[in-house]
Image (cartoon, rainbow, N blue to C red):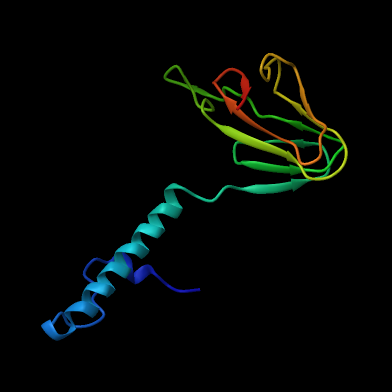
Length: 142
């Protein structure tokens, strides 16, 4: 793996900035900037976390994509979460559940919460999926 840590220091120059090396110097500067931008992009827009499940599972806020082979039940986390300053902390979260094998995938929200007004939803078709969005009190299919 390449170590890009030296590019976080804006004063790092691989060669002297003389006129004869000006094009190469600029090229190196652009590479430094792009590596720093890549680092921040990965930090603020991380890759989605996918996990495979073949047994009943309780989803967490760290789950993004669940690849499932049934028959199993996926229990969702609380759509509201903690409330801080009258704002539900889980509002706006999304989770994708996809059936990649055989068997029925049943999705069960926490407590009395619903998914588009239903107490449970199921994925029966092969390679079918549901993307769910929390409004801070219930789940909605997108």
